[in-house]
Length: 138
Image (cartoon, rainbow, N blue to C red):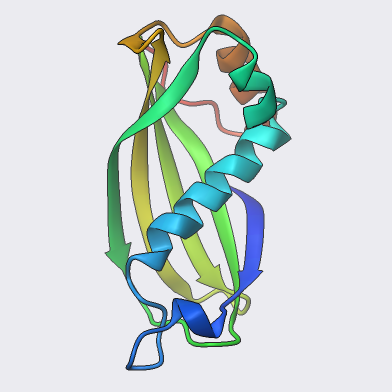
């Protein structure tokens, strides 16, 4: 898994118990995905000018340890599988000392004109070139 996004927990991201509110981890997943897409050469600005896009259809999270205001977090991501029209991502979020705070999965579907479409070959190739461990093929 590549560490692609890091952040420091802001006060606004914490709940009354002083720990990161669980819903913030979905935002962390999204920020990590955005950076991953930039890293492989598919920033959103470029995707918007093409004839395809990806839409999230599933997210799953398991919480392992709390993070608190001011903690430095590192988020990693990898493409676990590329199917005909879907992309499955594995994700994790750790404190700077390596303590696992959360891990999960996201599934996105490639769409064209609002309808599912085949994940473009160029995207598939970019993922394989970027990752040390290639994703599960179709």
